[in-house]
Image (cartoon, rainbow, N blue to C red; front, side, top):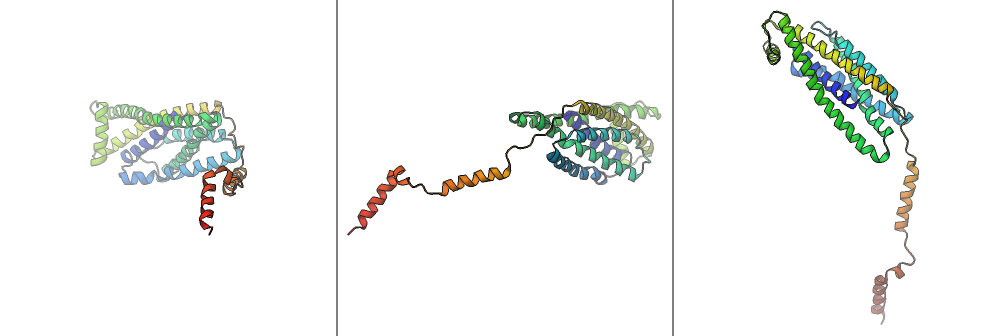
Length: 267
């Protein structure tokens, strides 16, 4: 699930930027501004999952809910086109950030709950590696789907047969120069992105199936209370501070120095 999460995360973030710039013709600055609803909701949702899980020890509901929301969002993204309203886009992006925030900590929590204590560190490191692998696959798989479909769409509107690499170059030129055929280009980009969102919805459905049947034991709690641990530290400090009545017997060198000082002090 970590690979799928990383794959879908970067697929949707990367190709939402393509939608903003290639269909809506937004500047790079405004593209970043339009992505704020997603980035601003990830952290609060992840924090909420951590707080609730620390109290209850249960997290499978967040796991299933996050994947379910992600399947729905990828499905709804297929309706986006050149004429989609700003409010619709921003609401979808906000719910996208909510879904990603629900899923971000649950993989790590699941590893902590299922692994032995001595293996938890290795499990957490593996989650990071798998999520990074998924991020690389997300851009590569999305680019393969998008570029192939874009070439087909450009050929369907009467242009000369365009190779895949040239289709991407035409899209960039249309974005930069606002060419006369920009409307046809934006329609082709929007239609190509629908294939990307459809593929993302299918992969999110696979993640949902894995989440439903995943083993999700309750997160164990710490058996040693904090107050008891503090008490032990205080006892150790007191033992260090209290003088040892037999220190002179244990330290013959110190006793010899004291005897010499007393001898010098006698008349």
